[in-house]
Length: 213
Length: 260
Image (cartoon, rainbow over all chains, first blue to last red; front, side, top):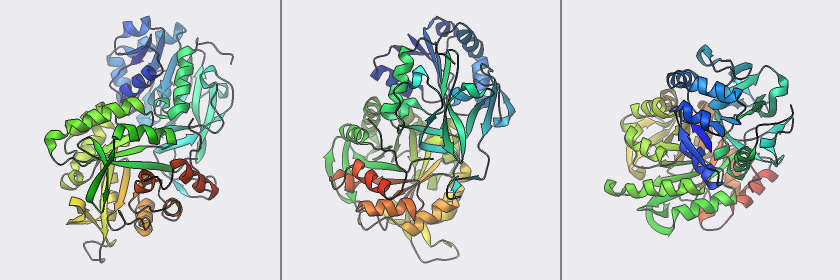
């Protein structure tokens, strides 16, 4: 069973609905014990890092996540959940979970397109491609032309380049898929990214948490 | 680099899709859930629903539509029409919509934008704008005025300053509809679209007037729109979403072309 962590950060139902469509059994919970008893964990989230960290701590979910990570359970972070697994966010200098070394950075303004010099909008919202830097079981079968749905103003920047699985481009190239051991995280929303996103979720459902870094 | 989005728009009344021609003589063309799934499989990047149900006691029908759509399609979709309170927004979002759009309610009570953005995040709050070209005046310096009630009532609000104010209040996106162009199939209002898009920092979806694929191309290039709403040209089968995207791609516009 996959536990989807509920810490009042956004639309969890869309993640749940996608997994149900794929035939993966899952449940939404904010109980740390249920998370530790689950076989896998999805850590979604939209909103502000500070508020999310407060809620996670209040519910005891910060420790549950750390323990699940240490226990080797496959964990998928999505959007804000791909950011606050790092150590610190530039969003109001918020200390984060620190499951991975690195920072959450803001797109700097003004942001300008690499080609054409046009001013780019923030948040980075809409469909964008990814450039895979290395193989990962969760990205298996993703085509070079596949695009994913993003909506964010900050992005994860792991300290180790080896933990960047894919990059996307919005004025700059930023990490859009990151991972470390049994933890993998997408800045985009796989649950809103059509068939390409469903494939990523399906891959996660069958992933054993192992991959060669 | 972001792709330009192609967004079919479905008007829904009493749980059935219609297409308004100049907001008059609406005719039924189908089931919104079926149509949403059809466009999803065809490569739509997002779907917009407008609930034009007249009586508020029948609004629950729309919540049911939203719930069923959310089980079928895995791309973002927004719902607008008749949302007046935070509670209205919450119900639609909980039923599975990614975004809600407010139009008249925001003009009457701009705080609803800020409240919505605080409660659900700016990315959920779309400002719908119905705009009419008027003579430029001290009150309407841009020469574009906000109108409501399908264009029948002028508000005295300048469209450009309203767009900026809504952005400052926390709107995450603008869906910009030209009442003059809407239903004409003569092309989007390019001047208006460009004016708004270049003067706000949030994405602008152009709406109203698409009659052929060149119009879509124009509004995404010269009009500087981030996305184009399409209705009649896809509903009546003039083009498929794939055909529109293929032409845009040939013209050098980046669009999402793989969806299966």
